[in-house]
Image (cartoon, rainbow, N blue to C red):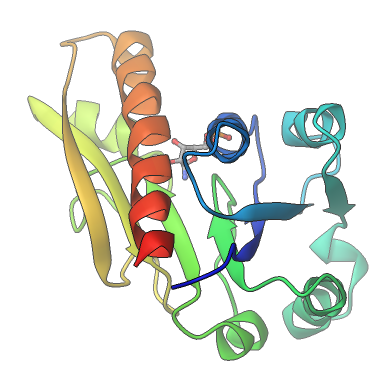
Length: 190
Ligand code: GRF
């Protein structure tokens, strides 16, 4: 791929992955251009992060629309206006529906804190600890209509710190930041 693809990051929480991707772009390590942060949670910390680094935000609640399609159409209108080419999900806690999947075929990427197909869905770290696995990890994958089911782009293993969720989570986040930026760098340098 040539040029610098314009992308939007979708997030519902802290946005540490958004921050890592943004920092990597600024450092010239990822050949893309972040043009928008989309959140379904207007109070999420990611909004502050985006404002601090001067990136536009679209913070609208799905519940203020009559349907999921109507919500996604409003998001799509903004993405089209800004000529966004890729959607990067980073802790966006919603399934992507037909409207966005149809508009961005093979152009939506997600990061998930487990070695998929193990522990899909919510609280993957809690699921892994509960199960007693010794090694879990991180997966970057294309998004399809399922829950964390799309084709896998990259994975990295992370050792569980036995009985210590906080430390395990710290390790996972550090690996996420590295793996997401590296994967986007490779994807957009092809
Ligand atoms: C990450 O663990 C990501 O894998 C999951 O949600 C978390 C988001 O963290 N989907 P942050 O908001 O990027 O800090």
